[in-house]
Every structure is written in structure tokens, then in C-alpha cells.
Length: 249
Image 1 (cartoon, rainbow, N blue to C red):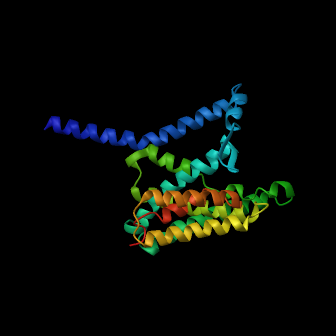
Image 2 (cartoon, helix red, strand yellow; image 1 turned 180 degrees about the vertical axis):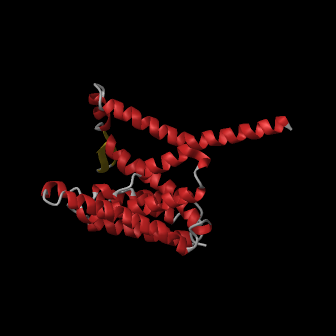
């Protein structure tokens, strides 16, 4: 009996450690980044972030510093993974009932409007500072989920789902704000290509295609199109998750 209890406790500890690992890595990387940015290492830190990296195919290619590959590329993957979790909850979890979506949606809208309004009220007499009204409207979903992962099973699953839903809706709103208020030039052609990719993904899903490589290939084209359109490319991760196999019953 004692031996079985010991094994059970050991399994629980392993599970908690695995769940908290992502949060620990995020917090550790954040601390290291802050130390590097505020020390003599800052020159090397900024040099790494501005390191040029390009992907070329014939005369077409994408050339960006490493920082933008992280912001536009890796964050799209992050939103894809979070979108898949949210999709599962929409299909068969706690968000399968429309009434359960209302609260996080209202929370996200309020979380954008109220901080933006407070910021605008404080900086109303400063036209330059007023241009940053959208900064407090964004929720850092990565840190929010990372902290919950760090707390492990002590956080109720319903709270994690609520925060994930709120943060995704909030970030989609932030992406739309960037597109409408902070983008100097929108490429209609690139947006049309992205929309066509989304329609194809939807049609492929409805046809019952299960090949992940097909979805990834079309999703990659959609990501490039959104990247070139002027709209934040991380939106491609959410859209691809929405059209991933088994989304539509």
C-alpha cells in the first residue's frame, strides 16, 4: 500500500513538473533578457536581435531581423497552439455553449476599451503621447498563460480556459487595431490571397481531408500573405487553428 502511494505521489509530482516547465522557461528567459538588456551585454543582445535572416526562393524572398522572425513567425506558431486548445473547448469543452463565450468576450472588450480610455484621458493634451493609446489595450497572452502553467494544477481548469479565451479575443482585437489605425499601407492583393487561402482551408476541412501537410502548406502561404499585407501575421496562426482537421463536425 505504501509502495503504491509512493508511486502515485511520484507520478503527480512528475505531472506538476512537466506542466510548470513552460512557465519556468518563460520566466527564466524573461529574467535573462532583462539582465542582458540592462547590462554591458546589451550591445550583444541587441546585435543578436537585429541579426538579419532571410529565406529566398528565386527572386522572391523574406528578409527580416531575428526579432521580427520571433514576433511574426514564432508567435504565429504560439497562437496556433493556443487556438487549437481553444477550438477543442469550443467543440466539446466548457465553451461549447454560446452563453459561456459571452463573459470572456465582454471581458476582452472591456480589457481593451477601459485601459485605452484611461490612457487617452491622461494624455489627451499631448498629441504625440496620445498616439500610443492602443498600447495598454493589448494583453500579454504568453505571460498570462505562462504564469498559470507555473502554478500548475492549483489553478482551476475553468480559469485557464477563461483566460485563454479572453486573451485570444483581446489579441485578435489588438491585431485589428494595428491593421486599421497603425498600418501605413495595406496590400489589398496580399489580403485577397490570404482570404483565398482561408476559403481553401475551410473547403478542405469540410471535405474531410486529414492530411496535416496540406493544411500546413496552405497555412504557410496564408502566413506569408498576411505578412506582406500589413496585417499582423500572427493572425494566420489563429485562422489555421480554426480550420484544422475535425473542427467542423
